[in-house]
Image 1 (cartoon, rainbow, N blue to C red):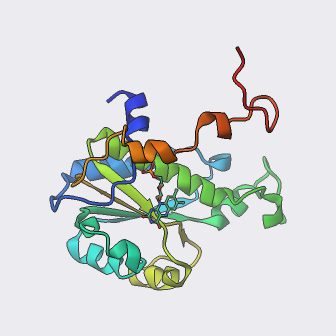
Image 2 (cartoon, rainbow, N blue to C red):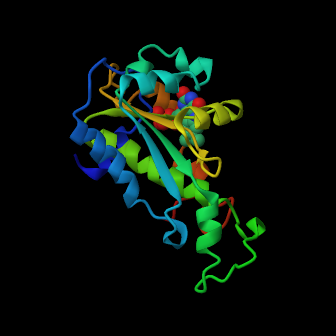
Length: 203
Ligand SMILES: Cc1cc2nc3c(=O)[nH]c(=O)nc-3n(C[C@H](O)[C@H](O)[C@H](O)COP(=O)(O)O)c2cc1C
């Protein structure tokens, strides 16, 4: 698929057919995350990959009821929990080429550990589209983080930033869905040209 089509077609797909994914496809989708950029090439991320039916069943217990109740979302044959690892960044930036030996979090304009895990996550969402699949990212509630970690042996130093479901779309959401197109904020509103608040396109 053309890259522009992948970007245009990407939508959060929440309903899946009850159909397994070829393992090689699941591996490709998850491996695409490793191509993401990361601050200082820290790669402070990890991905909990759930394909086994029992593992996936256990996973759904840690998801908000509203998401759990989405029809057919639990059919997704692949669930990935991207994990961010703050300490990997603090350690990486304490090295001589960066020199932040105080490991002070206040140095970070935004938490790059979460940012990088999110960039990796987006690559999985796009790869799913490229494979002819659907995917969805959704949040994990704060109260579910500890039980989710405990259930899957995730060390406390790793933060689940949410979860991604991947599978065959049960509902096809085209890029032209008018209800979505109407709600998407237009370029003239969100793109500031040369100065914040200046929206007109140059002619
Ligand atoms: C950080 C983040 C958190 C989100 N959390 C949820 C969520 O908890 N439940 C859900 O159904 N969708 C969630 N979404 C999906 C958004 O609702 C969706 O991206 C948005 O409505 C735009 O639709 P689209 O991605 O299909 O274009 C989340 C997306 C992001 C980026």
